[in-house]
Image (cartoon, rainbow, N blue to C red; front, side, top):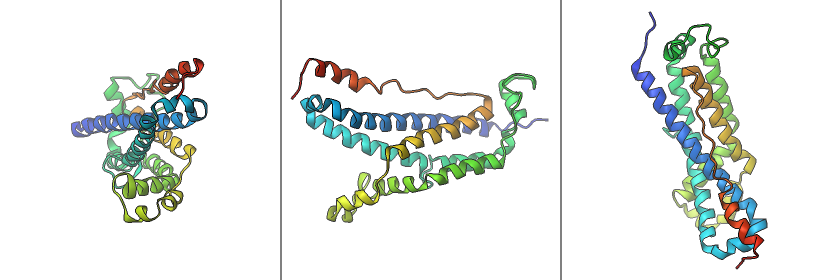
Length: 221
């Protein structure tokens, strides 16, 4: 007889909801921060209409991006993908096709069941390797968090420029993190009950939509 662990069922749903929300926040912070940088070349005069606001916004979005990336990707964080994979590995016996059939009340012939397989330890290992591949950029981001954005290290006061240079990362590196989080949570969510639930933020163009009419009408500082 199929064994259902109600504690696991509820815990998995809480994990999924939490990771989706954290990833959505991270996507909005990172992409909005990049969008602001991209718009500088075209709309600098219009941004200078509220220069103090935009200076603060740049710092705020950078800090938020660093904090949320750390929440998801630093191995010591209880909310991280590492902790989620530990949870999954400890409960592989409940991530079988048979359990998915029970959760979705579906026969083995259902299109969303055919071709499915039990989640294996190899799948968890594969996703751990994906996290290991971005260890370098995550370490740099965690260092920025620990020594500047969440706390202030005395070394920063002495030579902030060198510290930032030593922990520099590229846009491509941090943008890739949003995709990794999506892929990992999506994989186990579909294995759990077939649910694919990753809303896409729609506000990336809001700032440009506000600045463009001012530029077209030559409104500037």
